[in-house]
Length: 273
Image (cartoon, rainbow, N blue to C red; front, side, top):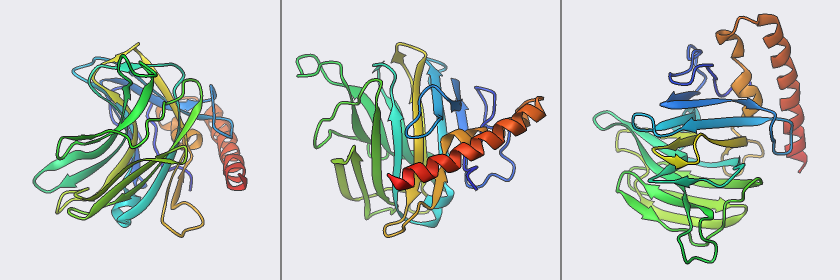
């Protein structure tokens, strides 16, 4: 079943189709939206468009969540492709990838976050976007081991290894195959909490606004497994429940059939590469 994420056609509330949620969902706040797009795609025909306008009381964010896999397996690899159509400048933070933990007392809060920042004036590439890591639980920021610019109008691949543990957790990130972060012996969840993963477009202030990014071919893996635990194929997944919020039932059914066929094509193309 490729319908790993749900998509509701309103921009400020949780998805309309959360009933029977198979371990994930799309959650929007402020002025934000997510949906399938044929603007650009990585290796296939479509991707997911994530769009926010800031500021908005006080933040805007769209978050594509998966929790069933990290709740089931404490040691997982994650991957997603990003496309930034233009350069952006966040004022405080720009969260595009995160893990959260829900504790009995502490509530549901971020732990490790992959943010996008800008290279400072005087740098060899001033203003260029790059990834940095932030531990929300300890308020610790990590500079990359190797600075790699986030390309504009081009795809970049982010892969991560996350060990979900309250004391002996581990976080590693690679960008296009180059390791950029490696943090060991650290808490990655609450002592009585779980782990949840999301791909996001989430900020308090970003210029220019609205800010749009695209994501594609997101998946989670166990080490040694030949296939992903779940293929979060964005185009089909986000369109899977279009009909719950639309009255054009026949057209939606045809659209879903087409996207399902394209999702299979994407999978075979990716598996062969």
